[in-house]
Length: 296
Length: 235
Ligand SMILES: Nc1ncnc2c1ncn2[C@@H]1O[C@H](COP(=O)(O)OP(=O)(O)OP(=O)(O)O)[C@@H](O)[C@H]1O
Ligand SMILES: [Mg+2]
Image (cartoon, rainbow over all chains, first blue to last red; front, side):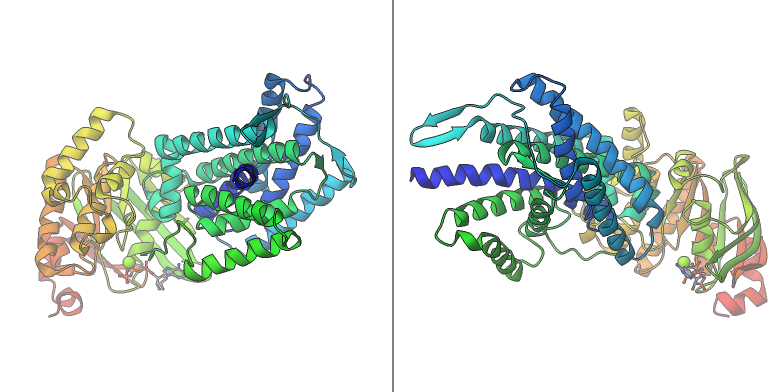
């Protein structure tokens, strides 16, 4: 039983990171109907900003850790908005395939520029926050796991408030429901898309820091696998659906953790993806997604 | 109030509107009629900034609109009820109205607009919690007009409000259009294929054929014009 709870805790904290990344995929899909493949590299840049900013504050303090987290989120928000402005906005209205290919190009650009600047060798990520293990019942709970869950939860609540209780959030929903109609209501679509990229990238940066704290080695290609899984999580939850992305991330992280704790651990990725395929066979629109007939 | 001069619009190499000019006076209802593909929708979309003209000028209250983005044009009081209605079908009637008030910042004014909309279309108030996609075609058109009214328009662009609506409801909607114009002095540019009705409610009319204005005048007089009757009013 305690073994089960332990794995569940591990799984949820991994899943919370996938969820943070998945939110960015799903939000951008919501307003632009395309998959931003460079998103996983924004996650990587977030971790690297954390690495360098971490040198400027005393390690192992809460305020230092939070400052670094905020710096990475801000830095990546600017990066995400810049990518949108320079790479995607000129292609607005172009066929989706062109934009997808551009996104892959941006992704490669970030990965290889990262290798030039940061070097290809993995580096150890500093312990930004105080680290402590608690024994609760038979469970070992690390402060980092609690941190992941607390930060992810806080950010998701914040996101929910932004999306449902602010003007810009209202505009985001309007654009994702019907961009043409949103424009006629007076929504400035450029601002909404830019904001969405900023928001999604900030969440990815937080994911990057939390990931690096728990798997403390970072390199310019570190975003590839978590990014792929978060993308899968977004599809699993129903692409374009915000609560769906959060749920998809948690489900995927949990499944992956349970499989890695089992005799079939070598197949953990294969099994995670097999589950995805099975779920999508039965619910093609994802767990929370709904196929809607779009009226013109 | 609105002055369009030598407006030309094309989609790539295809010219859809070729050098049209017209003016609309404050407080009037003016109609633009013409058959399929005449360029009516293109004209409206260009006025509201969704399309950029190839040439020409659009002046609203003395200001050139052709350089402005759509949201800036809405902010100046020009609201567009698009062809096919484009309501937010996954939102409730209430939420659709809220979206219509997106640029409105004064809560008292939003409340007044909402009351007004419900006085014009009481049916919508009964269906306020209903998903907009489940409304009937006529109700969706009422919602689309109401949503535009939530933006406190000075000028309303209506693109084929009779499209796909039962004949009984069409006359109701046209009565409401006249009422909106009369109550609040909102100027209306009405695009229609249903020339009979459009000429009945409007003061002035322009007839568009393959991107050119081929006839214009007082609606009353056009209704009696034999040539127009033959082409658009079924003899
Ligand atoms: N997106 C587009 N791309 C290319 N051509 C277009 C596009 N939209 C319209 N056209 C063309 O422009 C011309 C004018 O179209 P428009 O939609 O303005 O006509 P309309 O008068 O509104 O017709 P209807 O009464 O059928 O709505 C048509 O020949 C049409 O084929
Ligand atoms: Mg049309």
